[in-house]
Each structure stands twice: as C-alpha cells, then as structure tokens.
Amino acid sequence: MDKQWHAAFETELTENILPFWQRMADPSGGFYGKADFFGNIDPGANRGGVLCARILWTFSAAFRATNEPIYRKMAAHAQDYLLAHFYDHTYGGVYWMLDAAGQPVSDKKQFYNLAFAVYGLSEHYRATGDETSLQAAVELFETLERYGHDAAYGGYIEAAARDFSPLADTRLSLKDVACDKSMNTNLHVLEAYTNLYRVYPNERVKTRLHELIRLFLDHIIDPATAHLHLFFDRTWHNLSAHVSYGHDIECSWLLIEAAEVLGDAALLAEVTQRCIQMAEAVYAEGMDHETGYLADGLDEHGVLRTHTEWWVEAEHVVGMYQAWQSTGDAKYRDAAQQTWQLINRSLIDHVRGGWHCQIDADGIPSTNTPKADEWKCPYHNSRMCLEMMARLEKSEI
Image (cartoon, rainbow, N blue to C red; front, side, top):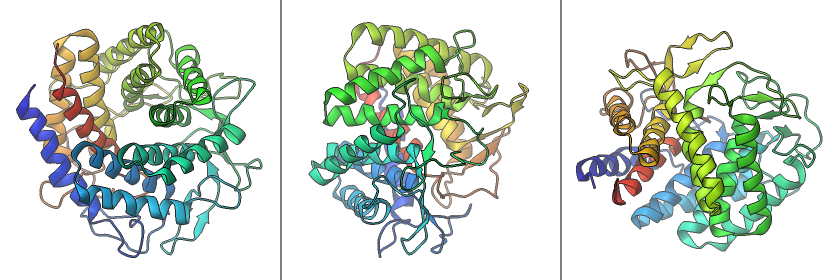
C-alpha cells in the first residue's frame, strides 16, 4: 500500500472536507443551503433535496469507514431533516427545494432527487443499522418504480409534478436539454440501486440494476467513441452531441461497481472491457498530461469547454485508478496521481477550508462560484477520499 498517498486522502477527508461541512450544520435542523467562495454562510438560502441526501451519504459513509461518533451524529442530523421536511408524506417522494424554514418552494418530483435519497438512506442503514432509513429507502424505491420506470422501453424518466402527474418542464437544470430521459438521471438511479442492493438484496432491485447496466451498454455509451450520450427521447434516440468527460469517467467506475455488486461474472467482464474503453477515451482526449487537468467536455459543436469543476477532477482520480486496477497499465495510476496533485494545488482551499467550485485551464479558481449550494456538495470529493483509501488498503497489482 502507498501509505503516504493513503494518508493524504485521509487527512483531506478528516481535516478539511468533513470539518467544512460540519460547519454547514444548522443547529435548529438540517444544513444551510449556501456558502460563498470565501465560505461565508447564507442562513437564508434555499435548501436542495439533492444536497441534503448527499450530506447524509457523506457522513454515513465516513462513519462506516472511521467509526468516529461525530460523523454518526452529523448523519443523523441530515437523516432527521430529510425525513421530516423533504419527504412528502402525502404523495410520496421528496421535494426538490425547501426554503430556510423547511417549507417547500419547489415540490416537483425529480427522479434524480429520489435516487439520491435512496443512496443516502441506504448508506445510513449500511453504516448504522437504522431500520427507519432502510424502510424509507425501500419506500422511495417503490415510488421510483411506480412513477419513474418506463416499463415499455426501460430506464427512468426525468420528473413529475408533486402528485406524479405530468410536468411540462422536466429538466434537471436550465443548462440541460429538454428530454424524456437523461444519462444523468439513469446513472444516479443505477448508483442508488447498487447501494440499496447491498443492504436489501431484493429480486426486483436486482432486476432493475441489471436492466440499467444493459441500458448503458446498449444505448447510452456510444460504441464508436466510448463517450456517453446525455439526452434521449423515450425510445433512447440520442438528442445531443455534448460530451461530458466528468460523467464519462464517473460512469466508468460506477458501472464496474454495479456489476461487482450483482455478482454476474460474465456481465462484469463485458462491463469492464467497455469501461476501460471509456477511461482511455477520457485519458486520450480530455486530460492535460502535464498538469493533470481534466477538461469539462465538448459542447454541441465539438468545442472544448475550457473550465472544469471540482467534481470532474474528483471522479477522474477514482476512474483513472480503477482503470489501472482493471488493466495494470501504470499510465492510468500516474494520471490519478497527477489529478490529485492538481486538486491539492488548485481546488482545495488551504486557507479557508473546503474546495473551490470551478477552475480554468490554468488552475485559477473562479471567485463568483460557491463553496456550497444545491449542487456544490461534499459527496464527490469525500467519496474520492473514501474510495481511494479503501482501494489503497487492498493489495495492489
């Protein structure tokens, strides 16, 4: 084991990422919804359901890895708020956005949001054995299946109104293409069901997880380029030419994880081969091999987007390390190390704590981006640390 590298991830997790998010806890309940570039908290900001679920996952996973009581306490703080305020006890599912007082300001049911609630709650049960979290995760799984799953063509639609009636605008964010289905929603349903199946090995969860893996292999990953298609109509016709290197590399290790959890050796072999191709495409096309910087992706005209975000770099570390574990090719491990060095140099705020949200190709942070909001969360970077700690502890090639 590379003890020095392991120690670096452990230090970053326990001395920077988690303490920053502990400071985001609202003593009266839940977590504040926003902090600016300098880490100044806005106590009046709205609070996103995705952020709450990701905080729940983060502190649950940290407690499971370290057994530190403070992380269990923070996880319970997030769980309490998620179930008391975000969970819709009338219609089911979870609200998209609350105000600072815990009242819904956007009550739509984005299935991406439900998936993250399943992810966080199943991790909380995995870490603590809290049956309330498992029961809620299973209920949300049933809601996803009842209202989000497409029985005719497979996969999951984007969103519905509070009562699960049709919704005119189902986009996850304003930058997304209007569509029936997206890669992003289906990737995070896959991620959630992978975690749920670990603690709830139900045959229906298994069936849906297998279906999702096949959808990625057969429809979502482009066989010619090894990039993900991002937006689709109901029958899986591609609607966009965008490329997201961050999602490509994130998907490349999440798919392997899902196949490993299913325990299907033939499927795992097929998935691993395809995911190596994805990682190689990212390595060859998106990464600056002098700085370790991974570009955000390509726009619809094939033009490189010259900024990158914190989560892209965090996922790149894990994805490149997974590619090394799958192939034994040292260039991938070197790429993971290079990107970690970039993170340490440009994304970690060694003065004020936390991570910057966005940097340019020269590694300069954008000062008009937040340290925390409905999207800027502790999940990608804490997961990078936890994944790398666990992988480094295992015997290496």
